[in-house]
Each structure stands twice: as C-alpha cells, then as structure tokens.
Image (cartoon, rainbow, N blue to C red):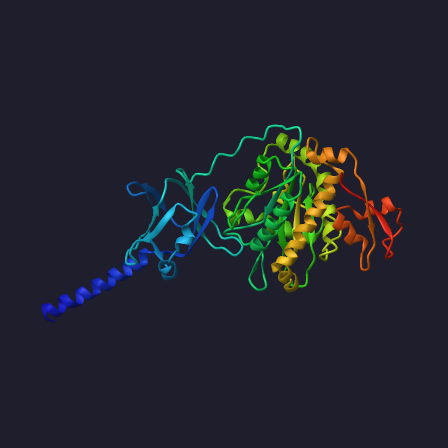
Length: 451
C-alpha cells in the first residue's frame, strides 16, 4: 500500500471517528422551546429528552444571558423557529441566538433589553409533559413590576372585593376538549366577562389573579386574593372526565375530610397536580406546617367553610336555569386553591370540556356571557344575605329593601325571575306565600328589590 493511500484511509477514519465522537458527546436534546410572558416574569421552557446539566451567566455591554447545556443538541425544529417581535414584545428579550449545530455543547444566548435576575430549575415528567428545563427572568430595571400597593386603609364604606381566578394558564393548558378547546382559554374568557359585570355593579369590585395566558402556582393565586383583601374567591374551571358522556356544571368547596364522591376525588387530584406542571417542581403538595399551625389552620378553615358552602349553593341555583348541573348540591374536595382560611372560596366547574356539546357551548361568547352572569347573580344573592361589615352594600341592605311589583308574562318561570332580579327562589316563595313553582299570566309578584 502506498504512503499516500495509507494517509488517505487514516484521514477518512479520523474524520468518521470525530463525527461519531461529536454525536456521542451530545447525549441529550432540546426538542422544543416555549416562551410565556407574565406580569412579574418571563418564562422560557425547554422540552428536553432527559435531565441535563446547565449553567447561566449574565454579560453586560450589551446585556445578554447565556445558557450553557453541555453534551446537548438542539433539534432542527426549535433551531429553525423564528420568534416574531410580537412574541417577545411583553418580555425583556430582544433576540435569541444558538451555537452552531456542529458543536457538541449547546449555548443559548438571550439578547436583553433590560436588566433581569434569572432563575432556573428542572421539572420531571408529569401529565402531558416530559422533562423540562425552566428559566425564569425577573425584571430588575424599568420593566420591573411596581411594588404591591399597601393595604387599603379602612374606610367608612368600601366595595365588596371579589377575586376571580381563571384556572391553569401558560404551560398548563388544563383539560383539552374536542376542537382543541383549551380549558385555560375558555375560563379566562368567562373570568374577564365576569369581572366586567362585577365592576359595573355599584359597591362591587373584581380583581383577576391572571389577566393573560401565563401560569400562577395555586398558593400565589390565593396570596393575590389576600393582598387585595378579597371578600370572596372564585376559581373558574372547565371539567373533564374519562368518557365524553359526562356533562353539567358543578361547584366545589373545600373538604376537611377529603372528597365526597369518586368524581370529586378524581377531579381534585387532577387539579392539584397542576402545581407540578406549572413549576413548583419537586415541592410536595402536602401541608408542611407543624402540628400547631395545622390545627389553627383547620379551625380557621372551618369558620369559612359554612360561608363557602352557602355561596356555592347560591351560584349553583343561579346556573341551573342556563346550564345542566352535574350535581345539584355543592360538592367538597381537597383543592389546594380553596385552602384559604380567611376567605370564602369556591371552585366552579362551568361544564365538561370533554363533552363535545358542552365544549361547543363553552367556546360560545353568548354562553360565556350567560355563565358569567349566572355566577355573579349567585354571588350577589349570597352577599345580599351576608353583606361584609364596613361595605357600602352592607349599609344599603341595613337600610331595608323596597318591594318591586312584577307582573307575570307568558313564558315566565320562577327560576328565570329569580335570576333576573338576583333573588333566590326560596325568597320569592316566602315573600309571596307560594306553595309551588306554578305561575299565572297576569299574576303580580312582590320581589325584594334594592334601596
């Protein structure tokens, strides 16, 4: 064999060996990248083939955040992805760059528009997601969120504050129904309509835990309600079941002894797992407080449980005329988001998104409006009998309510009239000495009105 041929063969073998070495070195892969903007942070989620080592460091002039992932390759799909300016408009990221595909180690460079404080952690597979690397960017410069306002000073007359919590969001879509109906999208739409209706009512004020497509841990949702000194907490969801035939709306309150039915138990476990999806990571969902704190918490929760059950039943009664009920009584289950010891809290499943018919209704703006109105009617009815002390609404109730005369028209039903005037059917029956629900055209009902 000639020296030239010998050198050529060795060169080819060395090149092939180097190629295999490079491939073998990149043992992990980034399969997808998602970006979610929230008021207090920007979240980048890297879907990875397996847990990986990684390092972060900041550079100045210009501002950059560098994310190094040794022995990791970037799949072609995320490498070719181009983020539009609108995708990054609510973030501190101007541009995203990657190291060459020929390198065994992956480097991701975020060009930043302002100062940030990065935080990263790994998440294990859960539900529809596999392994993930999460990088959160907390604004530190001009885009940093304003400090939470101090508690509102006590006033002679204040509004009743209703905290509305649209479930799921961001990387956690919740249940997914026919036609790619996402629970997170449906419940946010209903929550926004509900907030408008509440804010349009004198003496009431709505606050949303999230106003966009981003995730909040369950504890953060209740913390936001407490910061705003909420008088009630409404968590809005859309149910799902293993088969498409389940249907109807439900209302839940917290249960100290666990779920009251197999359905409630399954749903509670599903909702509680969302904290793992959203980013709490390996933190246990069990209560970490010591024995004394747990006892005190249980006592406080017991005091608000009765109020939650009463408010929940009022909401159920208001929903009944416009939507089938899955259960006619408030159910109880161990939802984390309801564990607020000082705020009456209910979780409203607006229907089964796994049911094709109900999924179609939940996508309808008309039905979303009806559902929001029914929820507010129920909450209004509850506060009509339990107005919080120091509110303008309490002063109004204490001054007494006028009676309104209403003449029955063709097609009227007692339940529809109750919803229309925001009173309970029981109150209508008691006021008018009705023995049943039958009404006659031309009959005049006395309806408790507002001063």
